[in-house]
Image (cartoon, rainbow, N blue to C red; front, side, top):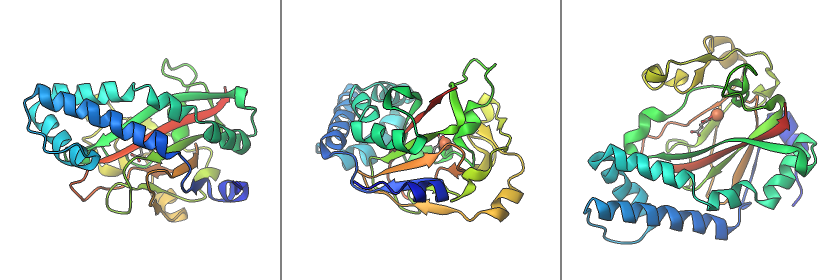
Length: 257
Ligand SMILES: O=C(O)CCC(=O)C(=O)O
Ligand SMILES: [Fe+2]
């Protein structure tokens, strides 16, 4: 594989198609399916077939509707599936990160891992504009992730295919050159109550100038693809106007602070 580093440095992101092996993608789908089936059975829900899309689009929302606790259970145990370690540590991913960040493999550290299981009942959970580096703000904070803001990135990995309108990642190409954007914190209880562009843990107060300076782009991607995004590139969750569940994974890597 030839890595187009220039494109990454120019645009602040790069998508690579057919990157993650099928064995890992199938494994993730199978293990998520098993957890959904077991949980549905515990609620005596009728399962018609063992098919990943049916399970995440039909059964998973019904589980959430029936029992918030069971929904939270699925999210929690899924995030801790061992197969996500295979994904996080996939050799080819680490090689690319090592080249993009100019670090030896053993110098890379990883930060928070996020699994998104956004069903039709989670439209409000779509996150607004931010830089990933906004999470790595203040070394004095107890959730500081010890990643260097200017030498880190995240990977966005779709498990379900995404396109504009069903939750594809939205970003502002070239905005990684903005190094001094201040991020405010939302009150925990208000994270998903504020306006769509400001939802999530952190938000940017004055988006006007930035929005004028950069155009936004929705990045369609298929399961098996990967998107490498500079930590300073502005991005947000794409809107999902469908009733389909959107499953995606974010992993964060960088140079130790
Ligand atoms: O939902 C997404 O695609 C993006 C979420 C995100 O950027 C984040 O959690 O930091
Ligand atoms: Fe993010």
